Image (cartoon, rainbow, N blue to C red; front, side, top):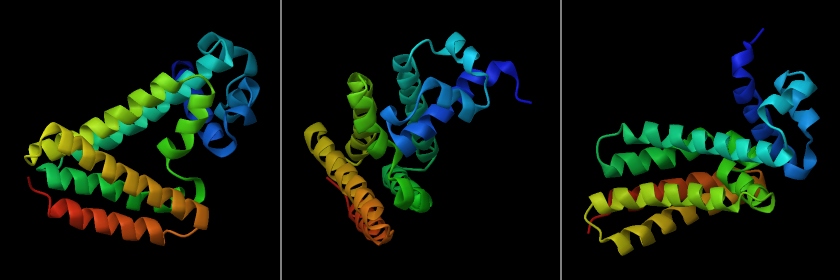
Length: 187
Protein backbone atom coordinates (compact mmCIF):
# COMPACT_ATOMS: atom_id res chain seq x y z
CA UNK A 1 0.00 0.00 0.00
CA UNK A 2 1.42 3.43 -0.94
CA UNK A 3 2.44 5.68 1.91
CA UNK A 4 0.07 8.44 2.99
CA UNK A 5 2.67 11.10 2.23
CA UNK A 6 2.51 10.41 -1.49
CA UNK A 7 -1.22 11.18 -1.75
CA UNK A 8 -0.82 14.68 -3.22
CA UNK A 9 1.47 13.32 -5.96
CA UNK A 10 -0.88 10.44 -6.73
CA UNK A 11 -3.85 12.81 -6.83
CA UNK A 12 -2.05 15.22 -9.19
CA UNK A 13 -0.97 12.36 -11.45
CA UNK A 14 -4.52 10.98 -11.55
CA UNK A 15 -6.00 14.41 -12.32
CA UNK A 16 -3.35 14.93 -15.01
CA UNK A 17 -4.33 11.66 -16.71
CA UNK A 18 -8.07 12.29 -16.35
CA UNK A 19 -7.70 15.79 -17.77
CA UNK A 20 -5.79 14.46 -20.78
CA UNK A 21 -8.38 11.73 -21.33
CA UNK A 22 -11.63 13.54 -20.50
CA UNK A 23 -10.91 17.24 -20.16
CA UNK A 24 -11.39 19.28 -17.00
CA UNK A 25 -15.17 19.08 -17.28
CA UNK A 26 -15.04 15.29 -17.61
CA UNK A 27 -14.03 14.49 -14.05
CA UNK A 28 -14.97 15.22 -10.46
CA UNK A 29 -12.82 15.24 -7.36
CA UNK A 30 -14.34 11.85 -6.50
CA UNK A 31 -13.16 10.53 -9.89
CA UNK A 32 -9.65 11.77 -9.14
CA UNK A 33 -9.68 10.14 -5.71
CA UNK A 34 -10.84 6.83 -7.19
CA UNK A 35 -8.20 6.93 -9.94
CA UNK A 36 -5.51 7.68 -7.36
CA UNK A 37 -6.69 4.96 -5.00
CA UNK A 38 -7.37 7.52 -2.28
CA UNK A 39 -10.52 7.62 -0.13
CA UNK A 40 -12.80 10.31 -1.58
CA UNK A 41 -13.07 12.20 1.69
CA UNK A 42 -9.33 12.57 2.11
CA UNK A 43 -8.86 14.44 -1.18
CA UNK A 44 -10.06 17.59 0.56
CA UNK A 45 -7.04 17.57 2.88
CA UNK A 46 -4.87 18.14 -0.16
CA UNK A 47 -7.12 19.88 -2.71
CA UNK A 48 -10.16 21.66 -1.28
CA UNK A 49 -11.68 22.58 -4.65
CA UNK A 50 -11.64 21.48 -8.25
CA UNK A 51 -9.85 24.74 -9.06
CA UNK A 52 -7.06 23.75 -6.66
CA UNK A 53 -6.90 20.34 -8.36
CA UNK A 54 -6.63 22.04 -11.77
CA UNK A 55 -3.62 23.95 -10.43
CA UNK A 56 -2.29 20.55 -9.35
CA UNK A 57 -2.61 19.41 -12.96
CA UNK A 58 -0.61 22.48 -14.00
CA UNK A 59 2.01 21.53 -11.40
CA UNK A 60 2.18 18.03 -12.86
CA UNK A 61 2.60 19.44 -16.37
CA UNK A 62 5.33 21.74 -15.05
CA UNK A 63 7.10 18.76 -13.46
CA UNK A 64 6.89 16.83 -16.72
CA UNK A 65 8.36 19.75 -18.65
CA UNK A 66 11.10 20.24 -16.03
CA UNK A 67 12.10 16.58 -16.32
CA UNK A 68 12.25 16.77 -20.11
CA UNK A 69 14.34 19.94 -20.09
CA UNK A 70 16.65 18.58 -17.38
CA UNK A 71 17.31 15.48 -19.47
CA UNK A 72 17.94 17.56 -22.59
CA UNK A 73 20.25 19.88 -20.65
CA UNK A 74 22.60 16.96 -20.01
CA UNK A 75 23.54 16.95 -23.69
CA UNK A 76 26.75 18.61 -24.81
CA UNK A 77 26.01 21.79 -26.73
CA UNK A 78 22.90 23.55 -27.97
CA UNK A 79 22.45 21.50 -31.15
CA UNK A 80 22.53 18.26 -29.16
CA UNK A 81 20.14 19.71 -26.56
CA UNK A 82 17.64 20.84 -29.20
CA UNK A 83 17.92 17.49 -30.97
CA UNK A 84 17.29 15.75 -27.65
CA UNK A 85 14.15 17.85 -27.19
CA UNK A 86 12.92 16.84 -30.64
CA UNK A 87 13.76 13.22 -29.83
CA UNK A 88 11.41 13.33 -26.84
CA UNK A 89 8.55 13.69 -29.30
CA UNK A 90 9.69 10.59 -31.15
CA UNK A 91 10.13 8.71 -27.89
CA UNK A 92 6.52 9.52 -27.02
CA UNK A 93 5.06 9.10 -30.51
CA UNK A 94 2.66 6.29 -29.57
CA UNK A 95 1.25 8.38 -26.74
CA UNK A 96 1.15 11.49 -28.94
CA UNK A 97 -0.72 9.67 -31.71
CA UNK A 98 -3.22 8.37 -29.16
CA UNK A 99 -3.64 11.45 -26.96
CA UNK A 100 -1.68 14.42 -28.33
CA UNK A 101 1.16 16.07 -26.45
CA UNK A 102 0.66 16.83 -22.79
CA UNK A 103 1.23 20.55 -23.26
CA UNK A 104 -0.85 20.64 -26.45
CA UNK A 105 -3.87 18.90 -24.97
CA UNK A 106 -3.72 20.26 -21.45
CA UNK A 107 -2.99 23.92 -22.21
CA UNK A 108 -6.46 24.67 -23.66
CA UNK A 109 -8.11 22.73 -20.83
CA UNK A 110 -6.16 24.60 -18.17
CA UNK A 111 -6.82 27.97 -19.82
CA UNK A 112 -10.57 27.36 -19.81
CA UNK A 113 -10.40 26.22 -16.20
CA UNK A 114 -8.86 29.47 -14.99
CA UNK A 115 -5.17 28.62 -15.06
CA UNK A 116 -4.27 30.75 -18.09
CA UNK A 117 -1.37 32.42 -16.30
CA UNK A 118 0.16 29.02 -15.53
CA UNK A 119 -0.22 27.94 -19.16
CA UNK A 120 1.49 31.10 -20.39
CA UNK A 121 4.32 30.60 -17.88
CA UNK A 122 4.82 26.98 -19.01
CA UNK A 123 4.84 27.87 -22.68
CA UNK A 124 7.16 30.83 -22.10
CA UNK A 125 9.50 28.63 -20.10
CA UNK A 126 9.73 26.17 -22.99
CA UNK A 127 10.12 28.90 -25.61
CA UNK A 128 12.73 30.60 -23.43
CA UNK A 129 14.71 27.39 -23.02
CA UNK A 130 14.69 26.75 -26.77
CA UNK A 131 15.60 30.38 -27.48
CA UNK A 132 18.53 30.14 -25.05
CA UNK A 133 19.91 27.26 -27.11
CA UNK A 134 19.73 29.38 -30.28
CA UNK A 135 21.34 32.31 -28.46
CA UNK A 136 24.19 29.98 -27.49
CA UNK A 137 24.58 29.29 -31.21
CA UNK A 138 25.12 33.03 -31.73
CA UNK A 139 21.67 34.30 -32.64
CA UNK A 140 20.50 37.65 -31.30
CA UNK A 141 17.69 37.38 -28.72
CA UNK A 142 14.90 38.34 -31.15
CA UNK A 143 16.16 35.93 -33.81
CA UNK A 144 16.62 33.18 -31.22
CA UNK A 145 13.05 33.66 -29.99
CA UNK A 146 11.74 33.59 -33.57
CA UNK A 147 13.59 30.33 -34.17
CA UNK A 148 12.28 28.92 -30.89
CA UNK A 149 8.72 29.76 -31.89
CA UNK A 150 9.29 28.18 -35.30
CA UNK A 151 10.66 24.97 -33.80
CA UNK A 152 7.94 24.65 -31.18
CA UNK A 153 5.13 25.52 -33.61
CA UNK A 154 6.46 23.01 -36.11
CA UNK A 155 6.80 20.09 -33.73
CA UNK A 156 3.58 20.78 -31.79
CA UNK A 157 1.67 21.25 -35.06
CA UNK A 158 3.04 17.98 -36.41
CA UNK A 159 2.09 16.29 -33.14
CA UNK A 160 -1.46 17.65 -33.40
CA UNK A 161 -1.70 16.39 -36.98
CA UNK A 162 -0.31 12.97 -36.01
CA UNK A 163 -2.93 12.78 -33.27
CA UNK A 164 -5.74 13.86 -35.61
CA UNK A 165 -4.72 11.35 -38.29
CA UNK A 166 -3.86 8.57 -35.86
CA UNK A 167 -0.56 8.25 -37.72
CA UNK A 168 2.96 9.11 -36.48
CA UNK A 169 4.24 10.01 -39.96
CA UNK A 170 3.66 13.80 -39.75
CA UNK A 171 5.47 13.87 -36.41
CA UNK A 172 8.33 11.69 -37.62
CA UNK A 173 8.84 13.74 -40.78
CA UNK A 174 8.70 17.11 -39.02
CA UNK A 175 11.01 15.98 -36.21
CA UNK A 176 13.55 14.81 -38.80
CA UNK A 177 13.19 18.06 -40.77
CA UNK A 178 13.62 20.20 -37.66
CA UNK A 179 16.61 18.13 -36.51
CA UNK A 180 18.29 18.80 -39.88
CA UNK A 181 17.37 22.50 -39.61
CA UNK A 182 18.84 22.69 -36.10
CA UNK A 183 22.02 20.89 -37.15
CA UNK A 184 22.63 23.58 -39.79
CA UNK A 185 21.79 26.49 -37.47
CA UNK A 186 24.44 29.12 -37.02
CA UNK A 187 24.28 32.87 -36.72
